[in-house]
Amino acid sequence: MAHTFVVLDSARHDRAGFTCGVAALDDYLRQWAGQHQRDGIATTHVLIDDTQPRRILAYCTLSAAQLYLHKLREEDRKRLPAYPVPAIRLARLAVSQAERGKGYGPLLLGHAANLALSVRQTMGVRVLLVDAKDAQAAAFYEAFGFRRTANTALTLYLPIGRY
Ligand SMILES: CC(C)(COP(=O)(O)OP(=O)(O)OC[C@H]1O[C@@H](n2cnc3c(N)ncnc32)[C@H](O)[C@@H]1OP(=O)(O)O)[C@@H](O)C(=O)NCCC(=O)NCCS
Image (cartoon, rainbow, N blue to C red; front, side):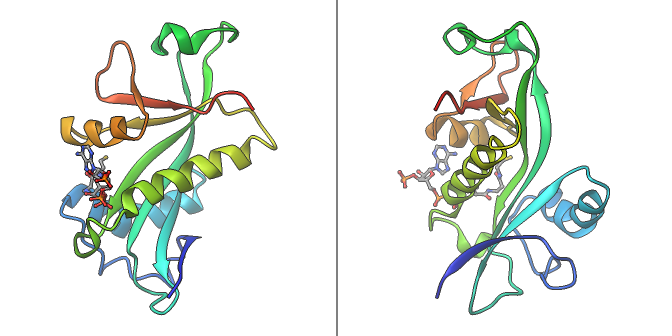
């Protein structure tokens, strides 16, 4: 069995069968993700197992965003121009309740970071941005290198840095 990330296809993926334990995240996938994708608001990426390609194991949703420069820590502001910082917002991230503890959460983060790096081939992106829904979610992101913004504790960013 192989795991693959693909862009959500409402006709192919079983959105109704996905439950992560947070109603707002389940509802988003069922009711809004497809519409937001068609409208150019956000794109949802789903993790599937090739042997059961309809079943969504986990998902994340991405949008273009920006962050005010002063929200970055001082060390992350070095050499940056005095403009808002180009960002990709990790707008939603959830793992199916049945699939918890298998490392899919970190896999989603890695996928989002890879996508941000590939976007850089065509336009600037400096940080991955996330609005954690609560302190526990913020702790999850912090464990993987995200940093809290100076003023808003639940907004975190991952510097993508130079390369
Ligand atoms: C948070 C969530 C994405 C974690 O996904 P997961 O695939 O179950 O993650 P895992 O349990 O496999 O954990 C992977 C690693 O993350 C760490 N981790 C998980 N939750 C953590 C937390 N709240 N704080 C710190 N570390 C955390 C684990 O310790 C583990 O690290 P290890 O391998 O070094 O032990 C998942 O529980 C989920 O979808 N929750 C509901 C929705 C949600 O909260 N979304 C994010 C908020 S906006």
